[in-house]
Length: 302
Image 1 (cartoon, rainbow, N blue to C red):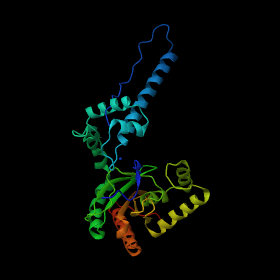
Image 2: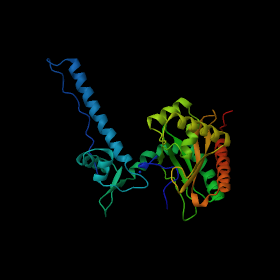
Image 3: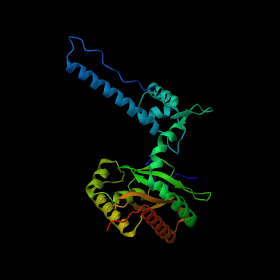
Image 4: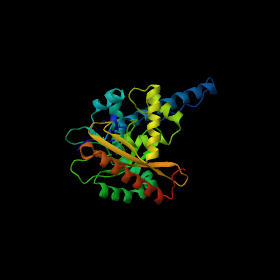
């Protein structure tokens, strides 16, 4: 099995995924003495808040180190990836392990994400109406095309997978749940960026939040034109552009206000996709996305 088509792995592209670290409790200030001013106390609180915030950020960085491609990681590997000392990573992992957010592999003594992560994500996934509505449509799409189908959502600078129906073929491409993609040529990223203001797209490309090789003015303008053409066609294409072995097509899903809320993605091995097959996949993807839109009571913008 090869890696997902919309390659924004973490890393690579996640789009683009230990040991344990103790998260220290917040430090409360001592009662103010007659020689202490209120300004001093306020500064102490500010310092404590800053320290606690950095601990939380570090813990999140540890959790994000794990990917579908590399689910098992050791302390040294995580420390190298996120730029923290091994002792710090070890303490964080210890606390995460106590909370069942990571667990230790018995044989390798490395870490993987724990079942506590599912418990945390459960309420959010349950409330994702798009996911519930799209599931039967994705099943139909996979039956029709024989390829994997997935539902993607946008977090502002990444496309994220929230549902997937795998292909029945032995050789297939997947978009694992939670996978995140930020490569400009990923088909789902193209779909979401096509709904953004052009100035916003330029800012994302120039800042590197969305990755595109050779970001000069001509490249950005050519990319914006490509996004317009994708919207007119009804689906975006990634024909071996993020990986020579992978193809992806994606189409937009809209809510009742005409806002894009998700996209349907079909990832497939390139060897199985001719130009004719690509068009068929694109049409099937667009039809499935339109069906999800209808089931949501949505409408495409005019």
